Image (cartoon, rainbow, N blue to C red; front, side):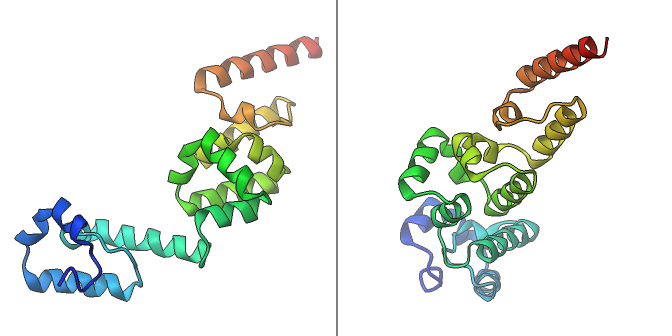
Length: 179
């Protein structure tokens, strides 16, 4: 049943818990997964909590909606207007990019481009794609409130301690200018 659904024998051997479940519930889960058009079914999908399965199916559906038939590499090369060699350099510099969910990449890139940052700036500081969008938005707002409009994304990617020190220096220099 699992093999017919496209689960690889290696994956089944890595997750033998799947054999402890009722055949009807396994078939029901496999049908639900197939309905959603998911390719690459894993054994954990058969025996996980239903809420977890629904979240996983939704995330895969969202990824498919963003990517279409493209790979993550093709999507980012297109969005950042860069070559495959430049993409390989970015992922060598910041391999965690490949682990970031596609919808988060899309939201972060949309925000950065709306705020006036260029694709070249993102390519120079790919780490920004791994940061929380809420943190990026908050830091950009705080810096602009201090009268500082960053021309580089590096300050948005600093550790909390480094960012706090920078913000403190900026607020101190702003007070000196006001005097």
